[in-house]
Image 1 (cartoon, rainbow, N blue to C red):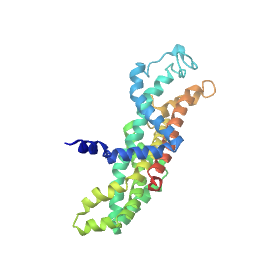
Image 2 (cartoon, rainbow, N blue to C red; image 1 turned 180 degrees about the vertical axis):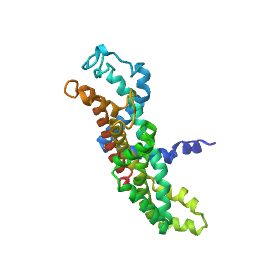
Image 3 (spheres, helix red, strand yellow; image 1 turned 90 degrees about the vertical axis):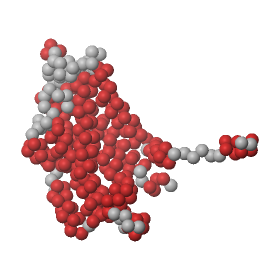
Image 4 (cartoon, rainbow, N blue to C red; image 1 turned 30 degrees about the vertical axis):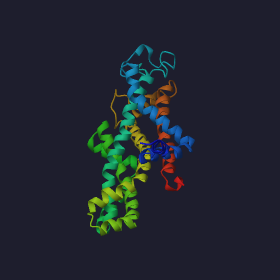
Length: 298
C-alpha cells in the first residue's frame, strides 16, 4: 500500500454504529429535560440498591427487639424502629426489591397480554376489532384499584396474585395504545408495498408494524410502573397483598397507621419511599415521551 493510500484510509470518517448513534441521540434529547434525567438516575440508583443494599446491610428485616420499639431516628437506627423494634431502614431496603419487582413484573405481564390484543384488533379491524374493544371497554369501566381488589379477593391475598391483578388492570391501557398506533401504521405506503410483494400477515405485524409502534408503549409502560406500585401498595395496606412479616412498603404503612401520633416515623419513611419512587417514574416517563417524539429529533 502506497503512502497516499495509507493517508486516505486513515482520513476516512469512521462510520458509527446506527444503534449506538440512536442511543446517543436519545440521551442527548433526554438531557434537555433535567427533571427527567434526575428521575432516570434515581430509578437506576434504586434498582441497583434494591439488589446490592440487602447484601451490604446483612441484617434480618424481620428481627424484633421489643426493648427498642418505637425508637426515633438515630445513628444506630437511621429511620428508627417500629412497634416490634424492627429497623425501618433495613425493612425499606429489603422491601425495595419487592415493590419494584411488582411494578416491573406487572407491567411486563400487562404489556405481554395487551400488545398482541391491541395489534390484532387494529390490524384486522371489523368484527374482530369491535368484539375485542368492547371487552376492553368493560375492563376500563371498573376503577383500577377496585378491579385489582376484586381479582385479589378471588385469587387470594399474596404478592403473586397482586402482581397478576395489577397486570390484568394494565391490559386495557396497552391494548388501546397499540391499537391506535396500528391503525395509523397499517395504512402507510411501506406496508402496502410489503403486502404487494406477497408478505404474510405475521411477517407484516411482527417485523414491520410492531417495531414502529413501540415508542408510545414504552412511555406508557414507564408511567404505568408508578401506578402499579401505588396499586400494589394500596392492596398491601388493605391487607390483601404482602402478608406479615414481609417488608413491603404498603404493609409497612399499615403497620404505622395506628401509631401516627406517637411514632409518626413508622409510617412517614415508607410513605416517602413510595412518593420518591412514583415521582421518579412519572417525571422520567414525561421526559421519555419527549425524547422519543420524532418531532424532537429535528
